[in-house]
Length: 408
Image 1 (cartoon, helix red, strand yellow):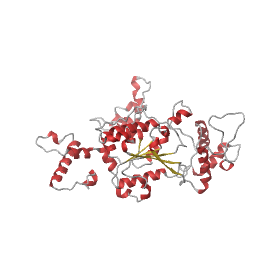
Image 2: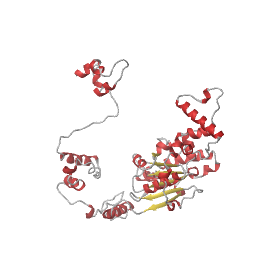
Image 3: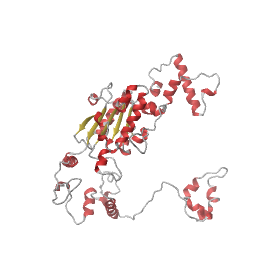
Image 4: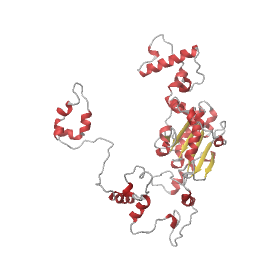
């Protein structure tokens, strides 16, 4: 059991190793109480290298997975990945083509054989879809302001540096959303860290680590404030010095859509690829291209009641089903502007047969301009009752100290 917990395969409890394990357990218990074996004269000390390996909570967190549960036999998915050849891969595919499934399969397979995989994503929602996923800034300590010279805030002696040195694979989801300088910052950091043990790593992409990137360039690209189209393209990963090292694989079959939606999916791909039919307007120039023709089969019938047409299409029998918990999460209306979203929301709320109530949220506490003798209005009654004072029973709070607040 301890071999699995500490990821220490040679941990056979012979006499010398049993003593080592006992010292480690004692040290761990003492550390929890602010002490150490070093505080007691004459006491033997555990092996520093073994103790450092076990105390690396970041590494133990990445190794603490149920490998038997996650083991998946799909050898064909890894035929292009040679363990002895560290390479950069890019998996290109639109939404629904199975990128997330591929990531999860690779992660489960490698972790089932004791490998260390670090899954990250450029967006928080995408990170939640990966087992143990984190955002790139959170995991790699990327600086907020990226430049062509920045490096990650990782010191060679840190636990995160130790984790990266033992990492077998890095998976980065939605890389088209991130600025190319984010990848270049990680590249410089890994080259510096890996070159401490292997000088040749300084000349390898990402220090010789295997990195799998995956996304769709037809979706959101890096956001450049007040940037032109050229500035956005220049900030993309495809314009990085790392891109020539990438081996690109393409996923084309949409596994998420039903048969009835495939025509729409194919039309969306044509729009993204620039091959969809367009309207050539004479006498007018369009910097971003010509307007795209939308087929009648993808449009709602024309109506004088637009809000009703949209709501009926997305939420049929809304009044009968608005209290159904499975009805609302399965439907959504994507509005191009906040004003349109507000209009549609107001229309749907007007159909609910009850009084409308507005609930406001707050993420901080602010003092109001109240008289000095009326300070209790700054706090809710529930908060005041939750306070505890030595020597004063909780039920005395409402009888004594806060009686003026109750009367108010």
